[in-house]
Amino acid sequence: MSDNVTYMNSDPNGLAAMLGGLIEANLQAHPERARLLDRPATFAITATDADVSVTIHLGDGAVKVANGVRGHPHVSVRGSSEDLIGLSSVPLRMGQPDVMSKEGRAVLGKILKGQVKVRGVVMQSGRLRRLNELLSVM
Amino acid sequence: MATFPSEEWLNEYVGLINDSPDYREAAATWEGDVTYVFEAEPDNGVPRDLYAWLDLWHGACRGSRYDVPAEEGGAAKFVIRAPYTRWKEVIRKELDPVKGMMQGKLKLKGDLPTIVRYVKAANVLVNLAGSVPTEFVDETA
Image 1 (cartoon, helix red, strand yellow):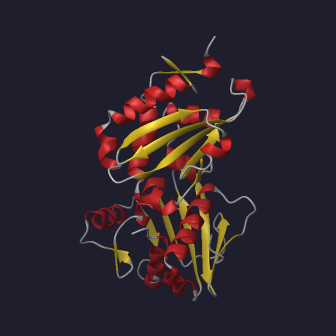
Image 2 (tube, each protein chain N blue to C red; image 1 turned 180 degrees about the horizontal axis):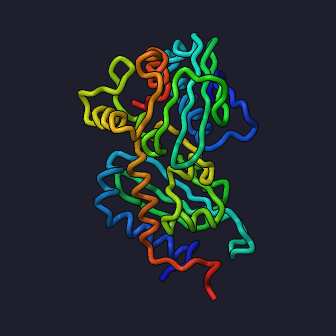
C-alpha cells in the first residue's frame, strides 16, 4: 500500500475505496507519478447511477480521499459507474484521452453527449490531466 | 435446477463460463484465481461464510472448488465478498456488480488496476452467474 493516500473517513464508501485503491496501486507501480501530488488540486467524482460521491485532494505529496463532495472542487466528474471505470482504462496522450484510439473517441463522445459531465475541462485542464494520469491503468 | 449456494450450482456456473465465447474473448489474457465469498446469513439458510474458488486462465475456468477453507479461499489473487442476499441480487440481475462495488455492497480485494483493465470480462463473468437456472436456498421448501 502507498503511504501517500489517506482516507478521511473510517469507513470509506465503495467509490472512495476503489479510486483510492487505484491511486495507491498506481503510485506503487509507478513511483514517478508521485510528482503529480505536489501542487494543490481538489476533484469531486460522482457515480450517478450508484448515487455515491468522493472528493480527492492532492497537495504536498499526499492524496486525501473523502466520502461525498467537500469544499469547492477545481474539477468535477459525473458519470455512471461503468463510465467512470472506463475513464481509467482509456489510453492517454499528454494526460488527456487519446482521440486517436477507439476508447479515447468513445470517452470524448460520451462527454459531448453529456453522458459523462466534466466541469473544469478548459479552465482546469492541467489539474484534470494530473487526475487522469493518477487514475490511469494503461 | 441447482440451489444457490451449492457445489452443483458452482459446477453449472463453470460449465457456462467455459461455453461462453464472450468470456473467452474478454478474458483471453486474464491470469489469476478468483474467490467468491458468500457471507453468512443464518436466517436465510447460509449458516456460515462459504468460499467458492475459481481457477480462471486465458478465458476459461480450469478448475473450481466449493466450500474451501477461508485461509485458502482468501489467498486467491482476487476475492469478491458480499452477504448472501447481495449475491442473490447480482444473480437475479437486480444489482449491477460494478455499481455494487461503487456502493460498497460488494467488496473486492486484489489488484485494482487489473480489475479495471478487465472490467468487461468481470461483467461477463458475473452476468453468467445470472444464466444458471437457480433456486435460492432461502426459497426452498
